[in-house]
Length: 296
View 1 (cartoon, rainbow, N blue to C red):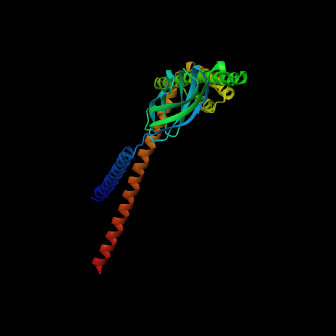
View 2 (view 1 turned 180 degrees about the vertical axis):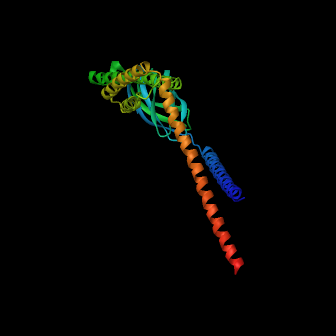
View 3 (view 1 turned 90 degrees about the vertical axis):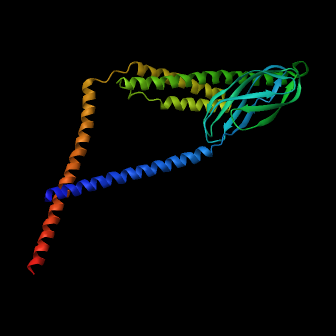
């Protein structure tokens, strides 16, 4: 009877602990859901233009950048621009596929200015709640400018073209990184050892390249993009040469897991035995006290 009573007490204690844990988890879940709901209701999608370059062009075909920033708290996808101005027409806009909160990126625009002068461009960003902005640019006629002005415009355009080419290369590296990450996940699921593959350096080179392009630093951008290409090839090679984890290694890993589980079970039974002994001591002491009182 004593053993049954102690076991019942232990069982009740265990049930109380489980119920308390469930209530705690439920409360945390409800709190999380409430916070997520409030957060969703307060989401603000907003995007601003932080830079526009160059601002001087010669009449004819041109290329320029519009730098934008996500000022909201949600990632924006497929950001584009609609541009209008006197004598201006757009050929193509290279959109931003995704822009995280607080991040900057750029739209690359190809177009044509049909007449010289001070042109006021109207820019409507599509993909955020930024509304319409205006940008003044100066368009010159090559037939009525000095050689120095022509050389400056040519240098600006060459720099813009280089930055465009680098941005295209960078986007390709980003796509390759995404594919590589998927391949790593698949290999890992198929029991390949991918522990030696580290993409941190590659991601740093990509991030640095992005910053260089946004700052218009062609030389630094080229260096970091070349580093990124080399690092990508290196990590991809390691993935291609990854070996399958042997059955023996997997058994050892599972043995460690089973040992941990067994240890937890042993600890549980040890706790039960301690509680049982403690209960027996309490019952014995209580019985002695009751007997002494009866004798009196």
